[in-house]
Image (cartoon, rainbow, N blue to C red; front, side, top):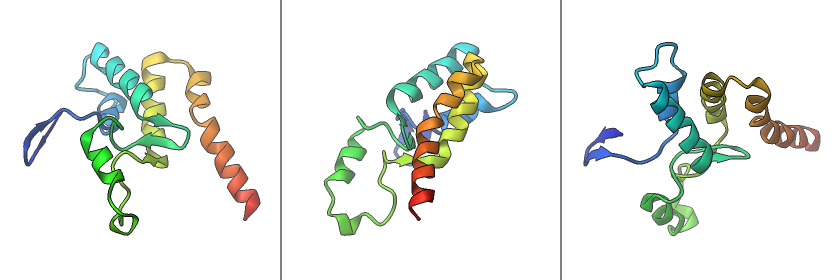
Length: 118
């Protein structure tokens, strides 16, 4: 939960993964697992992690805006660099390197196709 200008914001966001991947996490092991599982279930895409839960009202409202009004990355779009903190947090909780690597595979395939196409 974040403390924003409108008070507490319980939205699911990938920022919570940073608290899991810290060497000395402030979260309990149960909380860490819950964060990783929720992010895997609701934020993980083949191109990274969404910046916001797609069920969040802000995500839907942004999608309805005209294309020329979307100058920044809309909330809820996949962000490639967030896969790193997710993989680190997942590995910390589940201690399964092969499974952790598997989250990178779709992104690597996409980059490889793009590099060969250029």
